Each structure stands twice: as C-alpha cells, then as structure tokens.
Amino acid sequence: MTQTATLFLFVKGTAESPVEQLVADAQCAASLDTLEKLCAVPEIGTIVVATRSDAFSARARALGAHVENDSGAEFHWGNCLAALVRKYRAALPLYVGGGSGILMSAEDWRAMIQRVNAEPNTVVANNFFSCDFSAWSPANALDKIVLPAVDNDLAFRLGNRAGLRVVPLPKNAATQLDIDTPTDLLTIALHPAVGKHLRGFLDTARLDASRIEQIKSVLGNRGATALIAGRVSASLALSLERATRCQWRIFSEELGMRASGRGVRGQVHSLLGGYLDCLGAPEFFTALAQLADAAILDTRVLFAHRRLNPSASDRFNSDLLNAEEIADPFVRALTIAARAAAIPILLGGHSVVSGGMYALIGE
Image 1 (cartoon, helix red, strand yellow):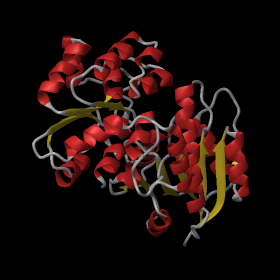
Image 2 (cartoon, rainbow, N blue to C red):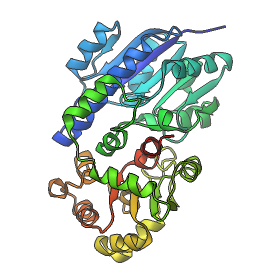
Image 3 (cartoon, helix red, strand yellow):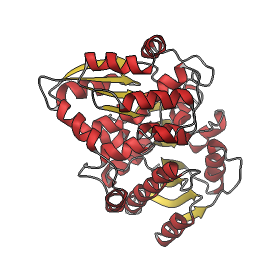
C-alpha cells in the first residue's frame, strides 16, 4: 500500500558565537530553498518544522508547515524526532537536517519516498555512516533502537539494530553536501544548483574564497598533486580520478568514527595524526608541502586522534584560519601553521572530504 510521507525538517537556527551564527544563518537560507521544493512534492502530506529560530518559524508557517519550537536546554535529537513521529502519526517519516540535501531536486525527493513505498522495511539514506537525511518504513522502527543524540547515527542504527534494509543513495554533491561548517559555504559558493535564498545569503556574506580558487587551479593542473586526508570514501576517490586532472595522494582514515561510537570511546587512531604528533604543526605542513601542491584535511579526525573535543567556535574559526579567535592551544597552533603553509590548505569537517569535494569537482 502506498503511504504518504510526513516531512520532519530540523533547523536549529540559533548559535552561541558569531562564526556559529554564520553557519546557522546559511542553514536557514538553504533550508528555506529545500522547504519550498518539498512543498511541491505530491508524495509528502504533513510538513513539520522543528526550529528555535523565530524568523524561520514564520517563513515555514507561511508555507503551510506545522512548527515545533523546542526551547528546552537539554535537547536530544533522537528523543525529539521520535516524539514528533508519534505526535503526527507518521507512517513513512522523511527526516531532513537543516542545510542538507540542498542540491536535491523535487524528483530526487520523490524517488526516495517511492523507493521506501516499494520496498517495506527499508531505510533510504544519503549516507549509512553519517546520515543527514533519510526516509524509512515502518516508522516504529525507532522503537527498536537506542535513539541517537545526533542525526548522523540514524541510518546505521536503523540498519544494524532495527534490522531495516539500508539503501544508500548514490554519492554525489546532491546527496553528500551538508552545510555543517564555514568551509562548506566556500565549496558550494560557485555551484550552479544553489537555491535563490542561499545564493542571496552567500552574496551578502562575502567570504574569502581565495583558497578555493587556488585549490581548484591545482585540481585542473595535470602537473600538480593534491593531497586529501580524513574520512575519504572509495566513491570519492573514484570521482576524483574521473573528474580532475591532477595527481592525488589520499589518506583515508576513520570512516564511521561517529556512527560506530569509536570517537566517543576514545578509539580513534590516525596515521596522519601520529605523524603530526611527531613533527609538530609547523613541520607537519612543511612536509605536506613537499608531497603536494594543495591539501584538503578533515581535521575532526586529527582532533579525535588526540582525544580533543574543541568547541564549535574553535572548529569553525580554524576552518576559516581565524587563529586569533581560537581558545584551544592545539587547534590554534594547527591553524596558525596551516595559514602559514607554503601551499593552500583547506580545513574542515567530514563534508570537506565528501560533499564539499563533490561540489568542487562538479560531480
């Protein structure tokens, strides 16, 4: 039997520092583009928006959405989602995290829902190990898992713990790109499929994209070498070989470190992180400059390797190379050395070696 999907769009919209607010505002702009697309999808019935932003609440209501404002201090993502699924009696939930799926078309969303309808006991997600959006049935599969505190673990737990068949979507910019850090704004700034609301935000934000331009120049140079390190998937490696002209050095480490719980348990080990420990930050980037003409680093693996949990403000300022705004001494030293490196360095989270790279290479 065909079931109508219930959309649950989560958009935080608030932040604790200026650099975090930059990302939150971008997520709101991108989510408004996504919401307008999803309102036109006939397979979606009820639309529910969970947000703490008054401005986004007003825009969502104007589009006919039910708005849930969770202003409690102890927000738990999984508990909130499960409560909303029960409240709205969703048979086929479609969860979308704010800032994700921004390049997905209406037809892409329709195909996701149709796949779940055609194959019961299935979860369709953009990423098994790091889920940003997903649709599944039956909805009560949530009752069979320990509800995760963040959305990244959802598909992993529905597959491994609730026994649903997991169908990952093809990996490309549309499915993998997620606005999660300031670097993501740099990597999508020139993408032709960016919606009008996010485009307007990016035009006013006026971020320095010089490093992106330098790195794109390396990617198109047959005589150059680029280095990419972190949670790099095999799919991305194949796309890099197909869509770029340069040579590559790829260090793939710790895929699924969050979904598997290795990060929380302090079990992350990075070969590149060990090299950084031995050399110190300045010499580490000197060594990278001897290996490549540009480097793209998923620094969250390096932080987890050192058992660090820096604040969002520190992480985001590091991504922008704003070392003076960083409190953690290791993160500050790493950022200073990256900024002084002889080659362009791009720092970020998982998306910098996933959706951001797909967007940069046009996949």
